[in-house]
Image 1 (cartoon, rainbow, N blue to C red):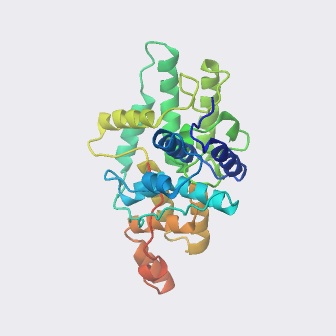
Image 2: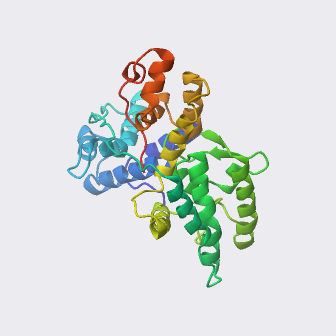
Image 3: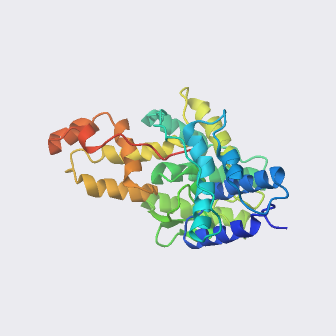
Length: 321
């Protein structure tokens, strides 16, 4: 049985094939498209043609959603309709999306002491009882969270990283499954590469046929709940502040920006490098982090003679946990 049940199933399958071939696909897109398909199957079981009502019903903003959540849920349906319209398969118009909201979330500012405490907790997990699940957690957790810290990749990118997409000879990660639609590559720091090599040898002895670089005991990748649960438990052992695993990505960006101080500016080049490293679809998304570095506006003004707001206009962050 196929993944999709409504009359749209053949068209959806063709659309997915097209998007995957173009490198523009993610698990989130597939999940939301499946929900739309279930909506059509449940409420329009006898339909043979896509109508405006079907689309508007599904894409209407829910009382439990903010603007950004609604956009995230419905953007794949909008893309699907655009695909159909270009091929003359529908006259239905794309839904009108709500205005994107500026992020109000301020990520946790890690201290050296907090990070030291957290990784100390990661490194001292119990290895008893000596079960595969216990042993794999003990060797996975310290490497997984250090990868987030040292590379700035998204938690979903680390979770769904396939073993075949990790080049341990050259120290390069091929990020294919991400939040956005663009494949990108990460070059590992030498110390992180050494740690990944040791982990690879250790986890291979437990799961020799693993598909994912960080395999769960069930043969798939770890879930978002696994990341949240482990981070919360280990963070709370020695730290009293509140933080999330995703804040390690923000920390990576901010630490990089802080290093630009005193080394000549090179604004455009450094911004572009950071944007590509983090897998942002546009440089505009990376500019969000300038608002999190208090001294950055002064640096820009001193080195360029222009005010912060003149160079970095109000932008919206594309990040999501």
